[in-house]
Amino acid sequence: MAQSRPEKEEEEELMLRALETERKVVVKVTNASRRTLSEPRVFIKSGFCQFKSDESIKPNKHALYGFRKMKANIKGCHGILGLRFQGTDEYFVLLFKNPYLYKRKLFSLSMENHPGVCDIDLRKLQEMSREEVRLDGRFAFSYAGSNCLTVRSRVLQVQVKAAMSESDESVVHVTVTDEGTGEGTDEGTNKPVVKDSNVNNLIAKFQNNNLGN
Image (cartoon, rainbow, N blue to C red; front, side, top):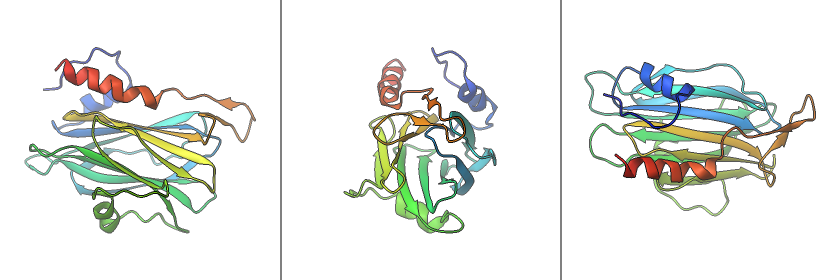
């Protein structure tokens, strides 16, 4: 049974309710950069992608993706989601793992450069599931509820941040911004793109919620 939440009902709350099993992950990607995110690709090692938007995410827009464990399965929910910066070879990949038993929930971010189809497969999932320290700013790993991850593309001057709640019904907030400003400029209108969520405050909110459980 879903836990009650003090926050107002938002899209991610409604999607959590619609997902059919008790181990689930909702990913909300907010594009606060000047670039369009396109070609969403998913690879699932365990679980099922129940909700997936195939549309591009334009500046000042967002998209939600819903994942859950398979019924009558104890492996939980473990997969990766990739989005390309339209018109470039750069793309980012988010890994999430919400296991069914008592293992720790984890997530990671990777900034990749590859022409053609995004490299979203079992090899990439296994690679991103390992805790690793890299100094190039293009990979970050953490356990849910503890850190906000950041990766950067110095070629495009953008950064991607992510935070994951420590819950059986996990929410991952991903925000893409132009590096150094926290916001971008829409390519079409040249107007500022304002973020609709502050990722830096998400960890504190998740930790406060967990203390109350």
